[in-house]
Every structure is written in structure tokens, then in C-alpha cells.
Length: 392
Image (cartoon, rainbow, N blue to C red; front, top):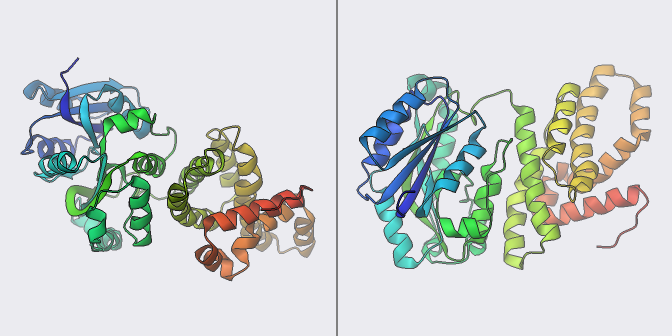
């Protein structure tokens, strides 16, 4: 067992041989020295383990653990389980830290007794080819991080209050590496990364911020994010994977709203966060094969308490949109159109999407009335469709 340190840095690694030295070098040259680096080799098939072993032999602060390939969430969870630090920071194996990152974050956290510090990143292209192909994505990242931070964000406040303020000014990012957190808060609230999905940060980072009693957001770039064509979030052809991640995020936070009855500020923070995700889900178009794969995958991740909502609210919405947009066009048969309109799935789907369709496809409805209004009344329409009368 290592002695306690001030900061635990968790670095999950899967086939990172091309970038790993840049990442670890940026950590080990930190001007603040009281930290440990916990590297999780997630079943890499390249030279990742060899590189990690060499670093651990040269610097006692680096420890290496290997596992079968389990994915990013389990790698982060395993690293968190081994952490001995007062604070924790997650760093992806292809990214880098600025040299003063730890010194400034630790100083700020101790001076202001903070549980949580959110900060900015600077995106950089892996090479000239990426800069050319993903130039628009890089520019979008830069515009987002260049938004000026309000002075009020530097005043310690609850994580829920900060999250509301950040979202109302388009600042909030759920990317976990951009959050410096007190480890005891994560453990006291049993916070873990959900395995088997992408967009796992959308659940973990939100829950972590909401659990913080004292949090700030600083207008400083402490993290250097490498943009490359083969990364998880820039890869194409993952419609089902993205949709499953969005739905799992929606369901996890809806469970908090419906079953845990949070305070008004937390509810407002979640409402602001979930509205765009709800809109994103409503825009998805799936083929029949994708629809089947989506339902099979998403049902594996839903708790029994939330299964009725997913079956009656989310799945019909996605499926009916798919049928209306693709099935009708592909057949061109009025008979099939009429049969579809008489079907239970269509009636439920139309009921579910009614609030979102009633004003220009739902965007204005969500903007004017809020996410909770839209979902609440959509769920009421669904229940009335199947013979259950409700009053909200």
C-alpha cells in the first residue's frame, strides 16, 4: 500500500503507444510533486504495457495495473479504487497536462476549501492531416473554451448552483478530465462510471458536481486535448452506441428526478442538462437493424424501476421516428401508412412526441416550457393512451 498523497492521477490506457510518452512526460514534469500516477493497461495489444513498465521502473510515483480489455469506465473505476490521494484527476492516455496544472489546482482547492474545480482545455490536432480533416471540430472546441467566464463562477458555491449558472451561460462541460475532485466526496456518494456505454462522462461528471458542497469554475486552460481521427468521440458509424449512451444518461438523471426527489436547485440543474439530450435523442433516425440493436443494448442498462418509462417514452419515440422517416418513404404505400397510423406503437409514439412536435418540431416547446414540462406532459399523454388518467 502506497502512503497517502495529495493527488491521484488516473490514466486509462488502451493501445496508446503512439501518444503515451507525451502524456506521462507532461505529468511527471509537474512543478507540484506530491502525486501518484495510476496507469490502467486495458488489455492493450501494442507496446503500451512495455512503455508503462519502463516509466514505473524509472519513477516510483508511477504504478501500473493490467486487466483484460474492459473499456474506459471499468479502467477508471479500477484506478479510482486504488487511489490514495486527497484529490483525483483523470487524464486520457493521449492527452497532456500543462506544467502548472497540479500546483495551481491544489493551491486553489486548499485555499478555498473546495470539493470540485472545473476548468478549461485547449484542443490541438494530432497531426497536419487531422488539422485539415477535423478543422471545423477543432474550431468548435476552441470557440466553446474561449467563452469568457463570469466572475461569479470563481465564488465557491454548491455544485448544483454552479452547474445551473454554467449551463445558463453555455459553459458546462461534462468531460471528466476537466474536473478536479475531492476523492472522499466521490466515495461518500458511491460515484462510479457506468460500464458498457459511451458518454459515461455525462453521468459521472454531473453526479460528481452535484455532490460537491463547494465548487468553482476557473477561466484557465489546464488540460491539452489531442484531437485525432481514431478516438472514440471522433469515430463515425456509431449511431447506436451514441444513442444508447444518451438514453442511459437521460434515464440515470431522470431516476434522480423521479425517485430521489432532489432539491429545487439540483432539479433545475438536471432539467437544463437533460433538455438538449432529449432533443438529441428525438432527432435520431435508425434503420430496422439499428433499431433492434438499440433496444437490445439499452434494455441491458436500465433498472427495473425505470424500465416502464423507457419502454413507453423513449423507445417508441425513436422507433416511430424511424418508421415515419424511412419506412413510409421506402414503401410509398398508402395502405401501410394507414395501418401504421392505426397501430398502438404509432399512437403511443405520437402521444410521446406531441409536446415536442406542437411548435416547430419541439425545439421551441422545450425552450419555452423546459425539459421537465415536456417529459411530464408527454408521459401523461402516454398513460392516457393506454387508459390511465393522470393529473400533473
